[in-house]
Image 1 (cartoon, rainbow, N blue to C red):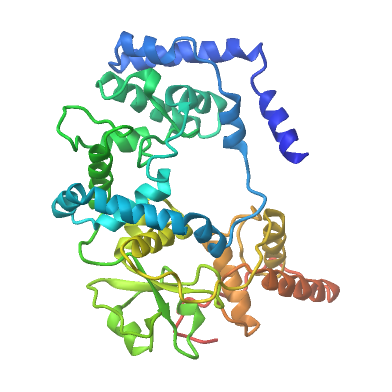
Image 2 (tube, rainbow, N blue to C red; image 1 turned 90 degrees about the vertical axis):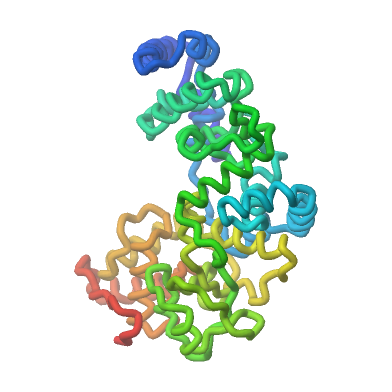
Length: 416
């Protein structure tokens, strides 16, 4: 019922009389694009007869009711079929991947992993016309300036002769090609990998692979260093040290008793590394390196970045995760909002009650856990919600709810 309501609401955004408003906007945009040097031929091909796409509005306004656990996220993306297909493609395109790795230093399994996660190796390129989708989003109002600039870049790509407007298809938000580049990313990082004088991220595998590698290199990729490794933490580990912001040289983690998940020593690495617990202290632990930050520049999702590393590991012949998945269940958006509100009312600064488990909320959970002598992993598990609700009820009954912030513990090495 809720999905039907959202769909009907979105369909109401562009009733017949609203087309005239879109046409006025599009005419003004066309003048701006022409003033920036985009040809009349490209403007005619890409913008003539455009109408807003209702489905794009639905997808843009969609808010998830539940976040996925790391185990669910990983399990739906790093599958046996995808691993086996990736291994076959890595062998099939070995000459291309070797050449790209030699030029940019990006391991072939990493590039194939991105390819698999972004479009399932080209099987899901997206079928929506990019200029039409971007025009819809630029007119719709939410992040309109961003999508307006992306539409201008899409027109510049067409104008440069890389693709015809009718063939420029991709995702609802404007991502396109095998590696799902946004138009601005295309213009900044896409390269002609097959030497035919144009860049075709839709049909040319060399163009797509070279472009992905070029992006990662420019984003700071460090050759011969990992993205992430599953690790085994020692007994009595200080859970507050498990944070992307808390980094130590690998030798110091070794001195603290951290090992690879198979109990072998950690590899040498020049940079500093952090420990992440994507599903709380009961789930798997990962050591992440500088290249993890590079992957996060591609997609700002910890789960995505860890999945890139794990899919690449398995494509290259490595094993699946060794650790257990962690506490089952996941909070709904409404439940996370309730947790944030309760934490705020007890003096733990969780930020706005927006239902998003961002760094501020995770920090508030860690402080709460530290105060209550719980494993301070910062993870919003269902059991943590139950604990917070019980404590909130007791504090409310005592008339002691407050908005005064509980002091933070800034140094994970210091126990309160």
